[in-house]
Length: 128
Image (cartoon, rainbow, N blue to C red; front, side, top):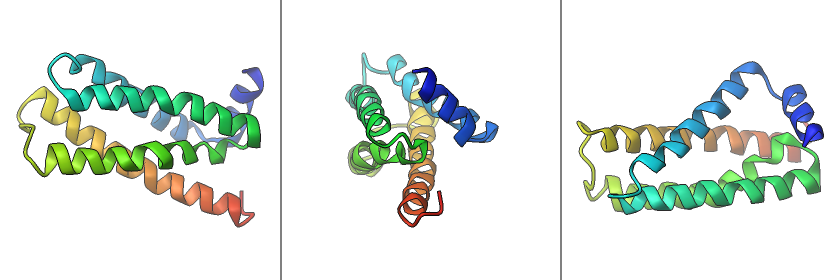
């Protein structure tokens, strides 16, 4: 674990570390909505599954820039689910706390996936 933490500090900027904390906050906020909203349960499940997959990727590669593979595997289908089941079907109201959370979550996932695709590409092309 110490090796992982050292690699994260060496391989990422302070801004990226703040972003990772933001993602943790947004995903963990699903706990506030799991009682009444099934999508929040799914978000929590995906978040929990991301951890062992990311850890496995780290153990195999020792490259923090490949951790985004776990996001691509799990968060891309989650994004499709959130769009088709929650946003497209208007299963949320933007003026509610749940609605604000859904929008923040979707935007956070989109931004993260863009950077994850970029990082994985840069690793596979030898730039990182």
